[in-house]
Image (cartoon, rainbow, N blue to C red; front, side):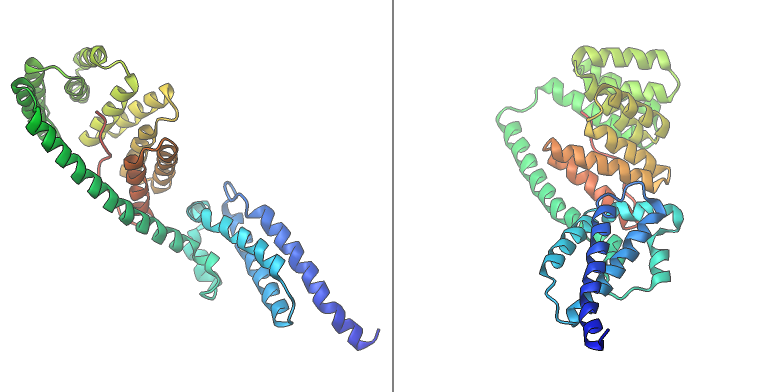
Amino acid sequence: MPKGMADADAPESGLTDLRADIRELEITASNLRGKGARVLDVLRLRDSVQGRFDALVDRGMDLRPEQTRLETIDNMIRRQGGLLGRELAESGGIEAARAERRPPEDYWWWFVDIEHAQHLRKTAIRYGAIIVGALILILVGNYVLTQLYGLSPLEKQAESYASRGEQLAQQGDLAGAIVEYEAANEVFPSASNYVWLSALYETLGETARAAEALAAAETLVQDRRAIYASLARNHDLLGNLDASEAWAYRLLALDNDYAQAWLYLGAVAEARGNTESAIKFFEEAARLASEQNDNPLYVLARMRMGMLMGGGASGPSGAGF
């Protein structure tokens, strides 16, 4: 075969190989869940595709169709940045794989975990500012309503007892907290106070009194989901991880799409040091909150995910009642 003919066939052969690799990458990169260490094969294939692509561009070939397909693949990989890191966790993590591979900086897919964490932090900061603004509006609105209408004297007195009760509970003075919540209910009974009493009695092992307080709460609030969510939260604040987890799962038994339940499960997993599970729970809470247009809960879940992805830790979860 004449030499010129062989040279002319080389770019076409390279293009065929490139397209075959892109097709394989489109299939394997579409869903990284459950791949574990095989995620590295996806990254290595992306390396190969880039090498073939650059070589053909250097030969002057028009690869605009292939470039469009690559951009779609890259978007799929970027969207799964957090998942990619978690899939590699059991095999040493993406940091170890990156250290072994030593990729060039423009091979961004080897740094997608860092990019994902930075995106979470920026999102947390942006939504944090929104939350602060919303809280200011709420506080101003509450102040105006209080000035115009105000709580009744009995409600104010009960609120004062309940506030002291929560402070004592978080300080570990459970007996003192019970006294305050009992006093609040004598003045002005509320489901929130009874739920706190149920959690406190349960913590002290007084199951009969805990059940009585829970029954009283259920007479005031018909939605058991709200009660169970508050119990999960209160036990979280008290440091009762097993109880908080149990009430969160009871809540999910009533409504598997109740976003707060997933948030509390994430808080429990985080407190136990199970970062991978905590991130998954927070991710599910954020997904459901987004679908349900619950922006404050969405932001809280994403912020806690961002803290964990960045190596930080957060405190107890959001409110129930």
